[in-house]
Amino acid sequence: MGRISETDLILNKDGSVYHLNLLPKHVSDIIIAVGDPGRVYKVSQYFDEVEFEMNKREFITHVGHFNDKKITVISTGIGTDNVEIFMTELDALVNLDLKTREPKSRKRKLKIIRIGTSGALQEDIPVGSHLVTDYAVGLDNLMNFYELPETDFEKSIANDIQKKVKIPFRPYVVQGSTALRTRIGHDMIQGNTITTPGFYAPQGRKVRAATRMPKLLDDLNFYHNKTSDFWLTNFEMETATYYALGRLLGHEMLSVNAIIANRIKNKFAKDPEKIVDTLIEKVLERI
View 1 (cartoon, helix red, strand yellow):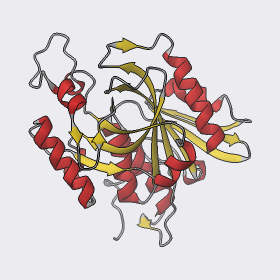
View 2 (cartoon, rainbow, N blue to C red):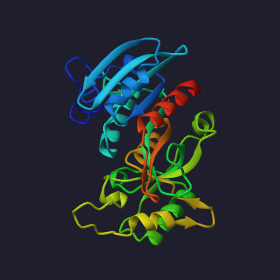
View 3 (cartoon, rainbow, N blue to C red):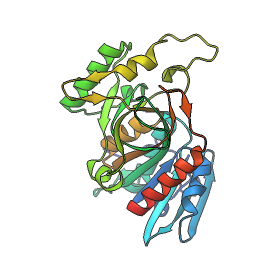
View 4 (cartoon, rainbow, N blue to C red):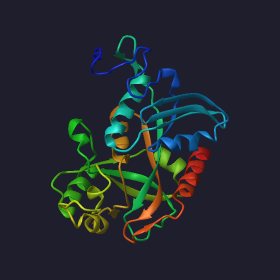
């Protein structure tokens, strides 16, 4: 791979990457990713001090130390398109020489942990619990534009979901970091997370607009691969892209989810922020 063109990777006048507005010195080995920009402050309030702040669109960044470890926390906003920008520019900061625009010979591996909110797809997953994602299932089309390597098991699950759920496209399936899952999510509910390209119809909701898959919620709830005892546990809008691009770019990825709703019971948390706060504290103590 040769020099990256000025239009393939856009830099600002100060040499920072276009959307994140960060320089390589702002990227620590440990990254916490959150969707809500306001959640950045909920994480950094535990830092000994915040050494650097950057606000650019929905991408808010704080850099600081917690228990003698340097941590960068960044918000991405909602959706897989934002995660693609986040992951691509973050990787460019650590694995490209931004002056020569050429890849570095020695690649740096980041540990990236997503702390997000999610709705349960199974009746026995309680509101207020914390869930760690083992496999992510992408119902978005982003990976149609990338050469994503999948294991035979991941391919078989993807094909099985398409067949049994009767969706008109093949999803992609990717496993996250087993090492990070063991370290951070060892006592959490272990699940397989559905990532959707929208919040309403793609997650089985109907408000006013007509939907093409009115039984989607039930079909995903009932899906079960008996051979591997593989169930689908929860909905959200980013994890599959984190896992897929983490694999493509060589970074360790983990998604942990604050369960603030149970879609099968139609229950929503009375205090969702408390569930998120306890998850943030748990992740920081285990990083």
